[in-house]
Length: 304
Image (cartoon, rainbow, N blue to C red; front, side):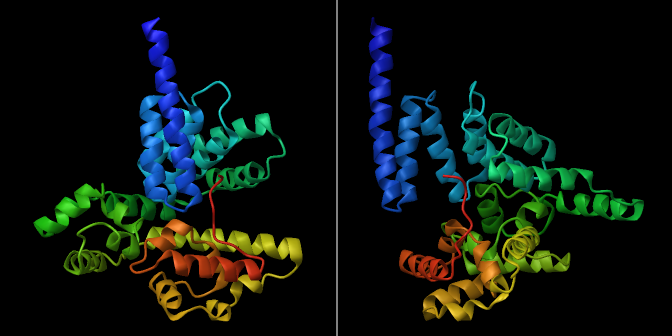
C-alpha cells in the first residue's frame, strides 16, 4: 500500500509540474518551461511525454547532449513517439552518426510509411552514407579530423578562457567550429577578451567560429531552394535580400551579426539561434516571424 500511494503521489506531482511547463511554453518562456519539466521528470521519469517536452525545449536552447540523451530515453519504449524518433535522427545526422539516424527514420517509416519528414530525411541519410570518397580526399579528411580532434588545452589560452570553454563542454577545435560567436556571447561571463583570444587561435589554423554550422546550413539551404524550385518552379524568393523585409534597425543588426543576407539564410535559423544574439529580444523575433509569414515563409523548426 505505501508503494502504491508513493507512485500516485509522484504521478500527481509530475502532472502538476508538466502543466506548469506547458503554460510557460505558451508564454514563450522556455527557461521556466525547462525548470518545470525537469521537476516533472524527476517525479516521474517513466513519463514519455514529459521526457519528450524536456528534450524538445533543451534542444531548442542548444543543450544538444542532454537533448539527445532524453530523446534516446523516449525512444526506448515499445512504441516510441514518431516526433522523438525524427528529432533524434536529425541530431544524429548533424553529428555524422548516419547509421543511428537511418535506424530511427526506418522505425518511423515502419509505423507510418508516408511520414513526409521521414521520407525526406531517409534520402539525405542514404546519400550521405553512399558518398564515395577518393583516396586523396580521404587523406585530407583524415588530416582534418586529426586537427579538429585536437584538444583546446593544447593551445596557449588564458585560464579564464580555458575555464569558460570547459564549462561549455567545448573540448576540441571541432567543437569550436560547431558554435557561433553569438552563442559564445550568450554564455554568462564570457567576455570580448576571451572571444578575441579564441578567434585569433582559430585564425592561425585558417579556421573560424561557426564554420561547421555555416557549411551545414548552406547545404540545407540549397536543399530547400531545390525543393521549392521543384514544387513551384520558382527558387528566386529565398535568394532575395532580407532588406526586402523592411525590418527595424535592431533586427537588421542582429541578422548582420549572424551573417544572414538572404531570405534563405534567415529561414535556416531557429528561434534559439536568433535569441542567442546579444540584445536580440522577443520583439525583434516576433517582428521577423510576422514578416516571413507575410511572404509565405518561416524560421526552421523542430517537430513539436
